Length: 193
Ligand SMILES: [Zn+2]
Image 1 (spheres, rainbow, N blue to C red):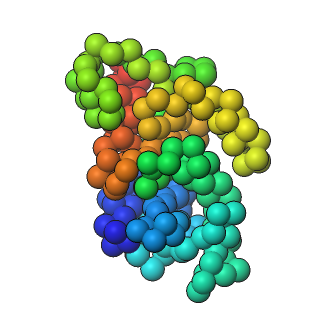
Image 2 (spheres, helix red, strand yellow):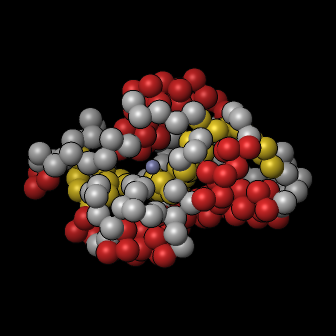
């Protein structure tokens, strides 16, 4: 799992989705241990050794005690708490969702694309999908409070943070990647339109 996630992180970086050491990624292993990407690493060079184990507060454990992961780890923990099936969380700074958030307030509404079936539970291109756009915050407590208020609107295993990027998750790496790519693709299509 660690090697597969590290490979995916490098692949997403090659697409330009994690410039300037940005973004973060996590997964929960079979022992229910949460692992998160170390911050400050160039994602083009990311390896499985850059994943650190954390406790429920987001602090490094074991060999990684004293290492503080990214502040955004709190968002990963919020997702795992509220979506117990989630095992992998991916965060992207892909440009198209960021651009969409500059032209849409509160939510990204989309309909009519075959690829929206990439979201688990979406059966038709005719479904009206609404992806929440959350206001960006530097204070993760405030951001997680905003997420609490919008929880019922989070229906498609992802959300956008305005002017910032996306979070997407899944029961496994394959599904989380599919959700992340589906959202990015829909944002690209609607923005180009
Ligand atoms: Zn970010």
